[in-house]
Picture 1 (cartoon, rainbow, N blue to C red):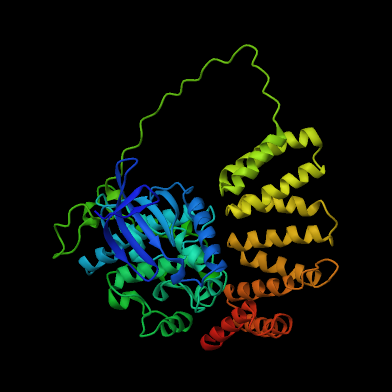
Picture 2 (cartoon, rainbow, N blue to C red):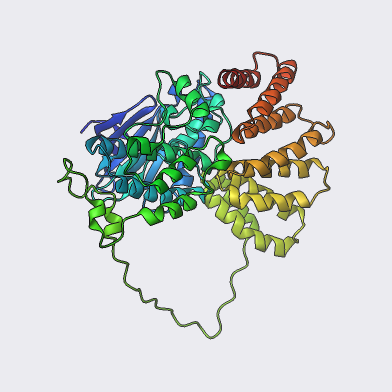
Length: 511
């Protein structure tokens, strides 16, 4: 036990591991008398000083808040998050077991039914995560735990998205953050990431479980990423003929270079793997080969062979309704708005969203649906939803707001622009690209948009979406023209110009 106290509550005990961005400790929660895991991150390791690091801190807390709302037994529970001095901290449940990398090293060759069971459980987790929507961005064996009961847990949800969002803006070197061995081609090239990005990493993990090695290795990160872009993996059945053809087919689809050629969703992957999963009464499937017996409960097929019994039916007692229920009190709209502002000032976005969304019907009844008061409330509601990462809920609000103005009105264009960003975050690159392209000529009209830098930002987003869709030639041409215009407007030393130049240089090396 150390003397260091994090957040005036968590006493650090022993270090579990460390990497380039931080450390993981076992710790003691002095308030609730329980053991927890504390991850400490140093923003200065991945971002420059000043406002960039502060932006990373703000987004870190927001992402932790969003990920804490995902309810799935395959995710580590997030207890707390914040900053302690110069370090960000994330407090999670303490998990007993082994990480998947160690589990694989201890049991080589890894039984293919185990690999199917691990990937199926990860599909279940990713399905829940992508529905939020959240993209993990750094799925790898070190971020997966196998518990003594055989269940699989995913770690670091949300942390990678903070460190990897707009990578070239958040790193001092412009290099992608992540693990090159598991990085999808579109992620390596700075394109928009989505559920398809996690599915590629899932394929790399499956390949490693079946073969003992990642499909693409090299002496440098650039060499590994080049192989991801241009080389085909060695068919795993050449290395292990006992692997079913159906499993190899799923694996090769997951590792497709083009995101559009990968499975449609994590649910689709699970459905393809379902016939290969062990069933109750087929206990032999979960038995490892000779030489690795006696491993006890760390068998990932166990949840399928011996699933937990369901909860018993619960009796719900409904209290009798009063004969004449009292009329609900009239909502105090100004007081609710003031309370939402206080919560926003304190960074309590989720509570502010609930208050703003709950007060809108009463405000519409009192002032009229199209009144300036209601419109202002709806604008704040949509903006807060976006700040809180709730893009799926923000999108229809932004569409409705845009429809209240003439098509070319600057307000309508800004709402459409925000809606396009939601589409981008929701993993719909085609729809986002079409909307950005439709908006660009309107934003280049000075009357509709007095900000000369906004068209450049729209063009940057178009280029990154082209990268994510696999059209590298069009992305390169878009970025080349963008760099010329950015240097003319901002100068060659401006951060925006430097970012575009780095992306072009990277793209030139991997084309």
